[in-house]
Length: 202
Image 1: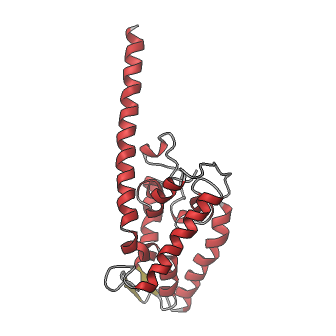
Image 2 (image 1 turned 60 degrees about the vertical axis):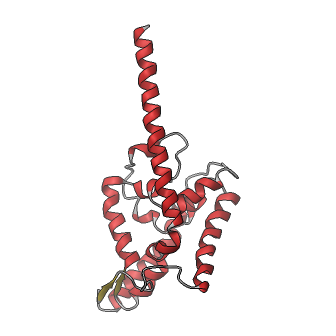
C-alpha cells in the first residue's frame, strides 16, 4: 500500500514538473512570436542568400551556423523552445490536429540546393569578404516599413495554411529551412518529450 502511494506521489511530481516546463516553454515561444517582426531577418534564408553574392556573412547565416553547432548538444531544442513559428503552429493545432507521416526528404530537397548555391556564391566571391550581422536590418528591426509587413504576413500565412490544410506542424516537417541545420542528432531537451509537446518535428 505504501509503495502504491509512493508511486502515485512520484508520478504526480513528474507530471507537475512537466507541466511547469511546458508553461515556461510556451511563454518563451509566445514572446518569440511577438518579437518575430523584429527578428524575422535573422531567420531569413533570403538575407543569407543576398549576402553570399558579395561574400558577406549575414546575421541569419551566422545564426544558422550557431544553431548547427549547438544542435550537437541540444538537438532540436531550438524547435521546441525558441522557434517563433512554433507557438503559432501550436495554436493552429486547435483547428486541425492531424499527425503527419515522416518525410524529411522534402525540406532537404527544397533547401539543400539553396544551401549549396550559397556555398557556391561564397566561392565565386573569393571566400568570406566580411561579416554584417545587421545586413538588410540596419536599424535592428526587420519589419520597419509597410512593404515588409507583406513579407511578414506572407510567412505567417504559409505556415498557417500548411498547418491547417495538411496537419500538425506541417511547416516543420516539410518546409522549414532551419530544420536541416538543427537535425544532425536526435537529442532533445527533456521537456520536449512531454505528452502533446510536438513542436519539435519527429
